[in-house]
Amino acid sequence: MDRVIDTALRASERASEVLLGYFEKLSSLEVEEKARNDFVTEADKKSEMIIIKTIQEVFPQHSIVAEETGRYEGNDWKWYIDPLDGTKNFIHGLPVFCISIGVEFRGELVAAVVRAPLLDQTFVAEKGEGAYCNGKRMKVSERPFENGLIATGFPFRGKDLLNDYLKCFKEVFLKVSGIRRCGSAAIDLAYTAKGVFDGFWEMSLHPWDIAAGVLLIEEAGGVVSDFEGKKGYLKTGNIIGASPKTYEKLLEIVQRHQRR
Image 1: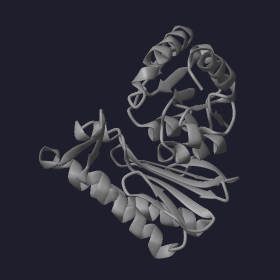
Image 2: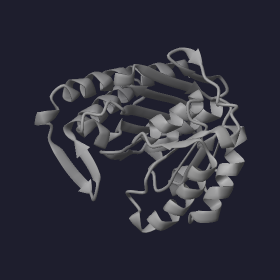
Image 3: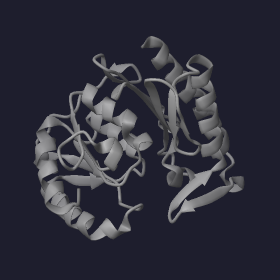
């Protein structure tokens, strides 16, 4: 497993260099709209290319599921790659973005790296070995739900779900101390693992958005599920991740208002 983690870290370092290079010249960055409010840039594509190249240099037989270039079929190992999570933030010069790499073996997430270059934070997790931020072990919060700070993401890929989402948002908002939206699901999940946020929920995400963050939370002592309270989040894109003190109450609210 050390080789897997080392390769993910090396890939994220190389991708960070690419992203920071483009971030310094945003005025000349080429931006495409893949779908309504869903963007891709040269930076996304170049970052993904260097990540895939780094993985394939060491593990040429591994499967890869990548946001921009699709799927490479291989063996029982599968890498979920988001080369730039928080593209909209990146385009506008907001330094809240990251590279997210999650690794699965025979259907079980076993390794994760989330690197936020301009926040100077690298999150790492290995199945059964804990989760760390810049080498310091992480633990989810122990705050009561009512005192919690909850993260979320707006359903920009499923605006037909907006009314259900807003009902859910309102109830959560009225019951906790605050709600935040970073604009990067991977960072929201990593900060939940770190105990900054007490919980997170969002819908209609892709597996590369959340694979790494799922393991970070679980290895930090948190709970992750889909809106059914099960483990189908990589298929449905609907996810709740939270501390044990927050999870059940957040799940209850989400189930009351949002389609599953």
